Every structure is written in structure tokens, then in C-alpha cells.
Image (cartoon, rainbow, N blue to C red; front, side, top):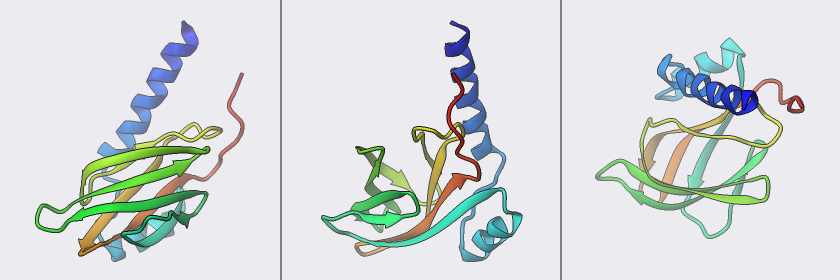
Length: 132
């Protein structure tokens, strides 16, 4: 019971990181984030494909881009699982949890064009083993 409450609280704190405005909306802001050094930053320039591309410790696969609406679909492959992320908007932080990492991983796409998405993956600096 206590562990479940702790877990919910940690998820809330992870979501609060987004609200604090610590997302980059272009390449210059991304460089600023890197200089802060609070998280690992992995840039990507994905093309629509049927095979995933490695981005840091995970793989991403861009499956659809709607340039008019600034939306995209992608699959995140982490911990041997495929996690579909659909109808996401440019500059919308996409958070997900990976085994062994307490804070969430975060993907931000800040540019879409025909069959292409440019952005970054942000991961926690320390990915120690979860507490028992």
C-alpha cells in the first residue's frame, strides 16, 4: 500500500518536470538543456521507416507524420516492448518509464516535415537499480 502510494507520487513528480518548462522547442534551446547537464540528451532526426533506429538506450520508429496538423505517430522500443505513441503534437513531451530508472524518459519532437521528425530523447543521469 505504501509502495503503491510512493509509486504514484513519483509518477506525479515526473509529470511535474514537464510543467516546469524544461523542454527544448528548437536546436538552440536544446543546446542550453545540454549545458545544464541535468539529464542525458540524445538528438534524433528520424525518417518514416519500417525498422527502428537506435536513439541512446532505446529505439524509435517513426510511423506517420501529419505536417498540416503538426502531429506524428511513433513506436518506442524499450525493455523488449513496443510502446505505440500516437497522435502526438510537436513540442508535446512524451514520457515513459524504463525498467531500472526512477524518473521517466522523455521524447520531444520539435520539427516535422514530410516523413521526418526531428527532436531529442532526455534520460535521467543516474539509472541505478530500483529500491526494494
